[in-house]
Length: 104
Picture (cartoon, one colour):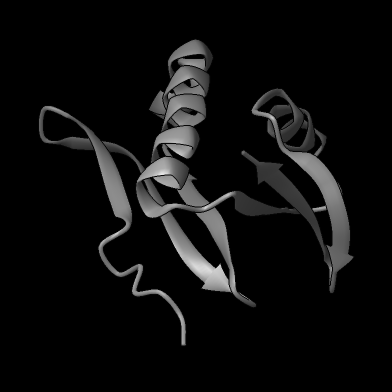
């Protein structure tokens, strides 16, 4: 049985504009982070990095997770560098994706 993560999504709003959406889904028993980020939020990299770094730790603590994974396209070097900067480390290949893992 998996954990119900249906309420584990959030939107970052500025006024009535959505700047980004983040969520966790259980994949093979491990929480996997996913997000959609607007160009406007991408243009504010320090804010984006700080928000994500804090949020990962907070969500992991609130939900009692010691691991969070993220999947990245192999040719997305920027995402791989960012994952490393957030504390994720390369874990394995899965189909056509690279799986990075953050541990508490």
